[in-house]
Image (cartoon, rainbow, N blue to C red; front, top):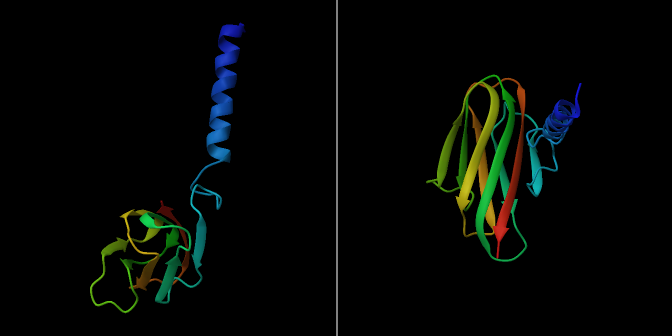
Length: 131
């Protein structure tokens, strides 16, 4: 084969290898600062995400995993709030949910409420954007 074919093929191979090897969906080091685990997705849980650096202007949240039922994810500024800032529904199967945007508090409360989940796993990756 000529070099005109081998070099582009080698380049594509390297690009594909880098993409799959450093896949952000599998890596705990993704570009997110911290990772929390929901240990038992069959039980309701409340998690507090905290930022202790600078003035918060935004938050990025990525929820990954797999569950066998449906669940709700609530996001708010404080615990025990009757009205939440955002509500997302998780459906059975693979979970890949992005949440976030403008956020002006140093804490973010995530409330996980399963409806009929018996098994699975969930990771919550997050980062606060500060100035």
